[in-house]
Image (tube, rainbow, N blue to C red):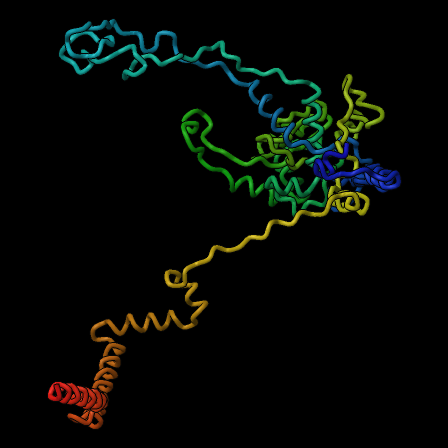
Length: 435
């Protein structure tokens, strides 16, 4: 049971005291995890609270979005009608192959002449108007058997999610003006007969923004469904759950987005449309009380559901951060592994301009200046030409002043070598004469 709490291979031997303290963290806390009672509002004057009723245990069930999506996917398949292609579709032509020797494929061809159809390929799934490959049949397995206990767990999870404002808002419902969740209304709501009165009641309960959202969401369906008697799409609004129908169904049925359901026949397709739980649910007092009678508690079981018990949470204390970061757990974990030190790849500054800019700040401006100096007619090119002209002129003046004929440094230096060479030649000449 410690596997969900700490990484595998990180846990050493616990001391007995540490284990006892960790178990105390997993025990259900003494304080309540949910509100013990829920307020009941008058349906005609929602600002007044008539009384309070205890919170049913089913609304504190653990959240299982994976189970809700799985059950919704399978249950939604049970209303499908069988459909397939006709047995003779694509094969209603008196066609035959032309055989070999005519430089055409051996596929059967439509008979006759004088029309475009004559001679066209038929029967084959590659031919226009031919039969399909592996044609669909009406005896396909359209429906799915769904485990009853799993269906009940999914409904319990969806009911619990409908009482949490963050999940209801995340699903898109506008509940900013709603007094509280779950929203429970007096039983007088079940006796409403007129749609106008029902709309006024919903607006008084804070659903005006929600009803307007549904109206604004009406759009023409994308695809061919618009031609098949389902032209428009619309978001789902609040779900009104009642105990006895004294006119509420007839009053609510023509309000866009609003649906009704009997508390004894709750349907996951309505509680979690699209497989996403968190629907905005409005309860009548009688339905809310009956909810507790149906599902009971974790100890008593569900009196009205045979062999069923409410799902228990996998962890009594779901605050994983508190458990993992506790001193007892952290004290027996290995120290955190440091990532190996990484070194950046060395870059050649002669090829990488950014690296050259780091080593030689201003190299980018200097390179840009040299580029502009090569552009004909630019101000920098003219300045560079003027600077060169001045430099050349100064060099000429210096040479004219300090480098005159035989007085230049190089020629003076070479004269010294010439004198030594003449002296050596004279000595050689004298030696030859003596001989």
